[in-house]
Each structure stands twice: as C-alpha cells, then as structure tokens.
Amino acid sequence: MARASPWMTGLASAALLVSQAHLALIVGVRRPNIICLQLSFSAERYWGILNAWGADGLRAYREHFAADALHLCVYALFGYVVATRGGLFPESAGRAAGRLAALLPLAALFDVAENLLQLRLLAGPFGAPSVLIPVSASCSLLKWGLVTFFALWVGGRLLGKCGSAGRAAH
View (cartoon, one colour):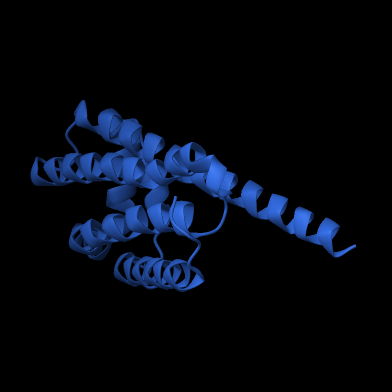
C-alpha cells in the first residue's frame, strides 16, 4: 500500500466536487429528481418522470451523458486515491484498502452500463415499454449501493481514526 498523501487525496476530492457540481448545473433541479428516474423499474414511472420534466428537462438529461462519462472516471479515481492514499488503513491492511479501492471503479462500470441502456432507451420510441428499463434501474441500484457502501466504510474508518486520535491525546 502506498504512503498517505493528503495532497493527492485533496486534489481527488476537489476534482470530484467540481465534476459533481458541473453535472448538477447541466441537469438542474428536476422534480422528481434524476435519482428517481435512475431507480425507476417500471416503464410507466420512467416515462412519466421524463414527461414531467418536459422538453427542456429531456434535453438537459440527454446532454448530461458526455459530462457523466468523465464524471464516472473522476469518481472511480477518487475512490482509488482515498482508499490507497487517504491514510485510512495501516500498512498491514493492504487487502482491506484494495477492496475499498475497487468499490467506486466497480460502481463506475455499472454507471457505464446504466448510461448505455439509458441512451438506447432515449433513442427508441418515447413512452414504449422495454425490458431495458428495469435492467438499467438494476445497474443504478448496484451503482448506488456500492457508492453507499464506500461512503459508510470510509466514514467508519474516519470515525475510528478520530476516536483513536482522541484516546491517544489523553
């Protein structure tokens, strides 16, 4: 495992923040939000959300895919850097760091699959039922599950480090 690098971790964090903010600006505030769309398993719900967004929302959604392709690379790299250079694990815990490092790149692969399925759906007839809708939602569910697991694991490691730092100060 590589030495901790606050500089690399900070740079990866800043890149993630900028990339996420850029996506938010492209898509804007939509009701229901984009996560509701991503996790829509039924054609009725999926097309209903896109219909509720109107032409402007649909245009913004279509335009976000190029930026999202870069964003998934950014968050995959962020996960790797935080796990391997964030100082979360002692040298002896290289396997645990490796497992954590794999979570966001794996989530990004599910994100790629989800995006390709979404683009295929958007290229077809609007409002048509398709088996691609629940498959895309399943990819999204797996992606968000991995992201959540990563966040909880990192949060737990950080809380543990804070607790041990507090005990060492006494």
